[in-house]
Image 1: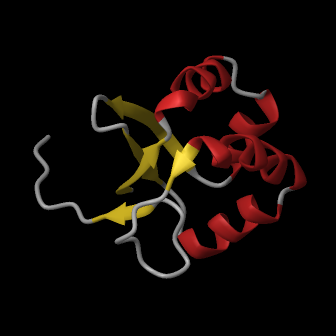
Image 2 (image 1 turned 90 degrees about the horizontal axis):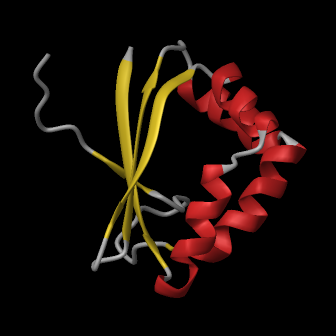
Length: 109
């Protein structure tokens, strides 16, 4: 199992929309997350900085392949088309990233 995290900004005027979307996440999206070996997935909001922090545990053997599978899914693309206008990517993210991946620097069980 690999713990993974990411961060992105959120547009202040879209916070309520984003919360409503995720309070009633589509079953197809939840099923795809599970099918891509992602478990224990959470998104947190930090205000007033307007940051979203995502955390999950990856239980598969090839994250890049599972991420590609998710990205190729038409229903996931539809979900992202609704969510992405709410988000404000960090200027410092790596090329090709929307959410900026984070490095784990400490863990304690």
